[in-house]
View 1 (cartoon, rainbow, N blue to C red):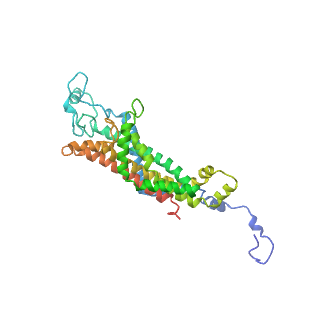
View 2 (cartoon, rainbow, N blue to C red):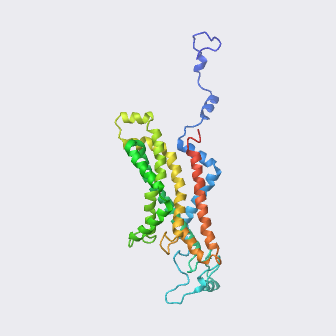
View 3 (cartoon, rainbow, N blue to C red):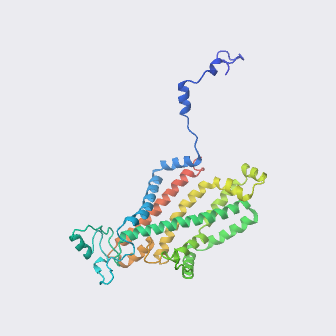
Length: 352
């Protein structure tokens, strides 16, 4: 502002008030634009090649499980060798990949074009590829819905425990400790067996998947929220003493409003990461229970039930066990790697 030639002069330098040149304007326009925490996290996530590839795989598998059943010429429960009023055609049972039954071969000789059975058929003459697709859909749906249930319950209880503190926090944390002390898988199996027999889902929208899946959601709601609650509680305990929270309390804001408007938005990175890592855990649990026969009702398939059914002919048709196992591994591995990428991108402590 003052003259550079006369440093001790109090006269203003008129050159400092000249209009900006084009070069100055271009320099200012090249400055970094304003951004948000979410945008910065997404940019860091996309720079992580492993996480990006995992996300693409997850999207491809999910979209395939939704779209393919709409256009596939075979149904997951249709026994191709069974026709009303005609004897059972056993040539459709246990077909090898890319082969057809006798009736289909005759139709092809007459000039009709038929789509091959990519993974062959199972012991009942059902197209195995579409059963794997439906099994993937069921497993993904269970994983996503279970993670939402865990998120809602864990976030609510953890926020209440962290904000209220005192006796409320002590009581909730003792309940969490008791649930942690239980053997998870044993309790899940016992509850699934008991609830699966007591729940009645006939003539409801859940009739096809069966009571076992509903009982599985109840089990997730009862047992799997504790880790999420602990994480949210720890974050809120460190945030509730911040100045903006004290200011909101001083103005008379209610605790529920402070939790919703101030505390939970500042825990968003922990919430996103924990939810992403919860999905593969839920998928693996569902596949394990379906493998034991506690999953969806037949003929609706899941990846675990397909692997269980494949054990009967494992020596002759090994690929029937390998295919659902590979799909489970791909889904769980992709979700785990994507969750790690989310943690690296959105955890402020790692980017400090």
